[in-house]
Length: 171
Image (cartoon, rainbow, N blue to C red; front, side):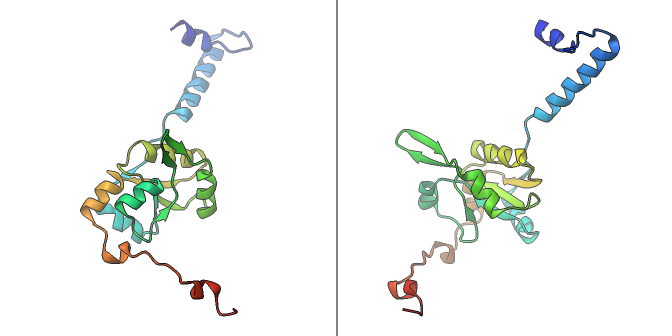
C-alpha cells in the first residue's frame, strides 16, 4: 500500500491535488494499457461463419501433435512451440512467420492449439501486442473442433510428388 501511495507523487516533487490526480489518471491509463488482452472466442459451430467471412485458421500446435491427430489441409500450420525430451521449446520465428503470412494487421486470424487455452492466449497476446485487430480463438481448441467436425478423407490424404514431378518439364 505504501508503494502505491508513493507512486502517485510525480517525479517533479509536486504534491498538489492537481498533480496527484493527473498522476493517478496516468497510472490508471498505463495499468489499463497493460491489462491482459482477452482474445474473443468462437464455438466450433461458429467457425464456418468466420471462415465464410475471410478468417484463416492458424493451427499453432506442434508438428508432433498435428501428426497425432491430423489437421485440415486448409489450415495454416505455424507451431508456437515444439515438444522435446526436455519439454516445450518456443518457436522463436513464430511472430516473424505470422507477419510473413499475415502482413496486414487487420488480417482475420482464428487461432487454435490443442485445447484452446494457454498457447492460444500466448499467441493472441503476441498478435495483440503487434497491433493485430481481428484475432479470435476456437473455444476448446482443435480437439473440440475435431470432435464436432471430424477430419474427412480428403483431409487425411498426404500428397507426395514423384521425382519426375519434382524435376519439372524442363529436365
